[in-house]
Image 1 (cartoon, rainbow, N blue to C red):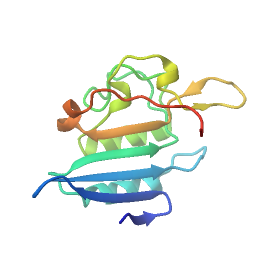
Image 2 (cartoon, rainbow, N blue to C red):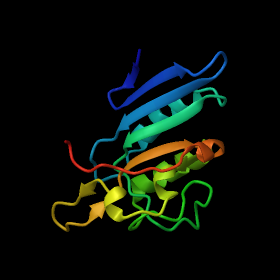
Image 3 (cartoon, helix red, strand yellow):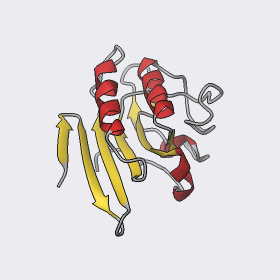
Image 4 (cartoon, helix red, strand yellow):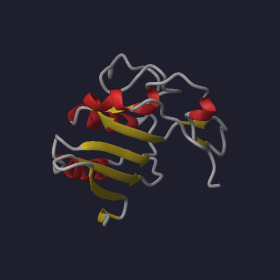
Length: 152
């Protein structure tokens, strides 16, 4: 049964075999203009309670832009991001670095429409703000990561 951690983070731990588990964390970060440090602190608290042996999928709408320049974060993101990083993107990448996580959306070369999910209403470009994140040592289990735009 999913257990709510706060109104924006939900976790579920599933048995895979006798001693193996997968933890799925679903997140929804609210739309804000300033860095949401409280959200990332809550998420760090949740992550610190998950056994390192669990397979981990951290998925959801982070309302963060991590950009395309992976020079600062080569262990955390691949080379296929888009646009520039914002302050929430920096918080997300720092969290990923702290917990040895990788943003799988940036690992695969694909068209932008298979990476982006939100269009800015005024300036109109599409942004990548929804992510699927896993542990660095489990990245070989991910064959592709793409998105489907729209609520339907």
